[in-house]
Image (cartoon, rainbow, N blue to C red; front, side, top):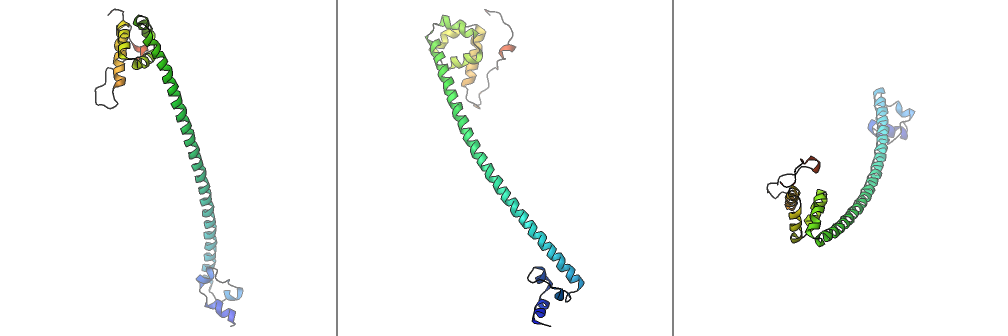
Length: 187
């Protein structure tokens, strides 16, 4: 045997399958048929593993790109959230300013003028206004309102002033205006 034949023959089938040397037609005669089949399966498996490795690397790169896009979207959404929060705060401040103006108008009215108007206001607006008025100004107006409406306003104002989860028993819940039974004046 020549020097090249001795080195190929000295290699194990695993070394050949790992690609450490290429099996030449001469070297193939040194292996049994089962050894050659094993070597072929190992070579096939090695190619499959390489292909799988490339696929995993590609998937990893795709995941990193998707992750980066998600992070960018999250950053963008946080900016939008901050903008919305600022706009809501500005809106609330504007609403509060408008309510303060209305309160000032009613505080400057005589109770005889404000009482009948309060009877006709929606409960929500009435509560918002009454809550912001000084007690000395709202008391005479409540005295001139319809009894039932004044009672409902007082009850709902007390409920609004309760701290959440204070442990206090809730006051009687008022039915919605559409659900209130018709009552007669003077009772």
